[in-house]
Length: 396
Image (cartoon, rainbow, N blue to C red; front, side):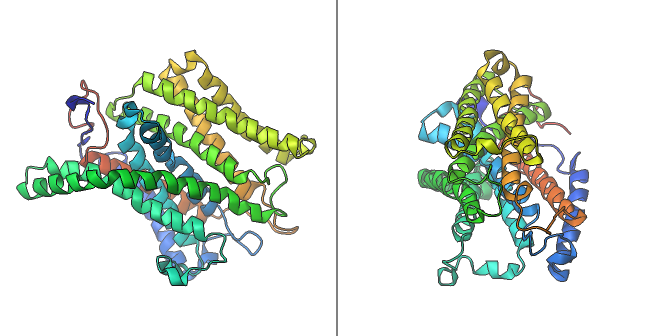
């Protein structure tokens, strides 16, 4: 990568649009969170003994982290398969991953009944070895720390370019030290999400009598892993396209072409696994015109459509069509996760659930906070690779 292609700060006013709107949305969410911490989870949530989790787990945790695996998807191409041309995508996708996973972890803290006990998670003697969520909790916590370490090179590069001799010296010195340690950090950044993303699917193996048979399968860990990769690759294309429209970020159609071909294989591979599993287990007979079957058809269509579209050269030659197919890939993975954790989850007759306004406010507010953090970091530090013809300093 040549010098003029290196990432650089976008610049501009930190509180420029849409920051006031994002701040206001999160402010409402923060008020709900504070009220919940003092008044209890029942004051803001419709969760019950039958539905012991609401939308925070399926959306804030399972979907947010699925989007955040764009960092894993790019890391697999860049480092594991030694394709250096993807390196320009690493910083934006790692930052997106760090934010998505951090928001997922914060949402878990809000949802826990005795949230203060989470402070004991790093203390190994206090681990509950009988908990099905222990591995997920430890892996996610470790991966959040790893992701923010991966964000540090952008911060240190920004410090090294500072006019202050002190900050410049700190940036150069610690940047060299971190560069030495990065191969080990990257190895962890690949292993940890592979572990906990499959475990998120494995967790639902325990709910055999509660999850609809069309979704409950021994392949849940593999299906969750494959679907998170399709979401991740889709999120990369969506993110970089939005950055191009907003900040004139560099979006290489040839690069998108290669990523999209990989994602087409992942998407259609998921479809083959899903249908093959249903056929092998004799569950295809369960399909009909009921509500569960319609959910299944919609979910499968959101994998088949982008997979077929991305196989077509005409789609990959158009940034708009590639963006649309990538959005469908993200939506397909998100729907599969929400379906498995909530839509097709039926604990027992008599229980029902619909998210409260408080739950919706927290979910939307967390998403708004994530966008705001991304904007601030990109304005201050060299994360995004901007086209040479783009106006320095970014939008006002």
